[in-house]
Amino acid sequence: MKTHLLACTLTLALGFSLGSCVQTQTMPSETVEGHVLIATWPFGQKATDLALQTLDEGGSPLDAIEQGIRLIEHLGCDRTVGLAGRPNAAGYTQLDACIMSGPDHGAGSVAAMEGIKHPISAARLVMEKNPHVMIVGEGARWFALEHGLESVDVSDIPAKKSAWEKARLSGTPVPDPGERGHDTIGVLLRDAQGNLFGGCSSSGAGDKTPGRVGDSPILGSGLYVDNAVGAAAGTGLGENIMRYSASAMIVELMRQGLSPQAACEEMVHRTAATDPLGYDLSICFIAINKAGETGAACSNDSFPYAVTTPKDSQVLRVGAVTAR
Ligand code: GLY
Image (cartoon, rainbow, N blue to C red; front, side, top):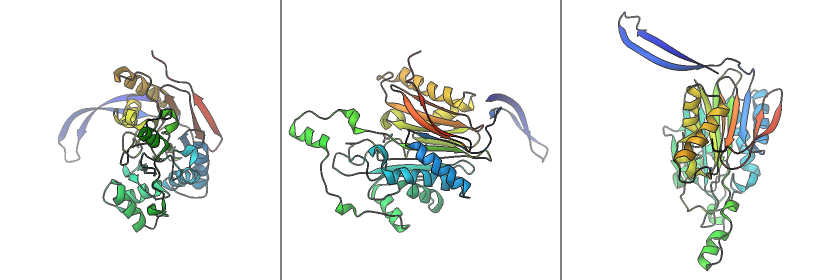
């Protein structure tokens, strides 16, 4: 990526000047040809492979994002996505998802939604068929049902307390919080035309308080897409991502000229520099820029992620970002 600082004077055809402006613009130097997809975690490769296949079969970029994420929601990968995700403290699953479309800066989001099999499809419906951007809880379920999305009857889900809640109530040791899981499928696409798209879906943190919303459906936190610059997505402990609007910040760092890799790493450093937790944040990021370059970083563990292009599909791994 090259950063160009453009000094410009806006002069309308009418013949008068709106005044001088200074604008930072990122221009791809070595553009990767064709579609480029990046996704969180090794299971993300299933999503990126299906997304690429969807594009090859004539699907739109948003179809590709939706189909890829639907597969992970269906498989319930890692028990952190979809209805098979870990239950909340009251014993049932509440799902979060969002989707963004770069060319029109469209966005749709659902949060704390119960009993809908494919929250990413609900998020896309919000973006395309609803004047609002974000719908939560019972309203999100109602909206999804109104649009015919596949559902389970939430009254059929046994109200069974989670292991953590039972342990708390009985005064026995609460299981390791690390077992609660808080992973997310995030998929980003820079298509062959240079446009950017993204989506993410999560059942959120296991044992969460009912109604808790994580980073995934919060635009700028779990996902952000700017068609002029790039896109970013987060996974990990949502609270530590939301407090810093991390995905939007990563995109802004790319706008300033950082590569996706450097921008993800910088976000971890920045958060660690101000957060009482230091690097013990359990946050990871993926990013892609307009040129199709990709990057990833994670706060306190190595982080596997998937990158798929028409030439290749592989799971890559970055080590934990360490203090500088
Ligand atoms: N990153 C998913 C969540 O914390 O809800």
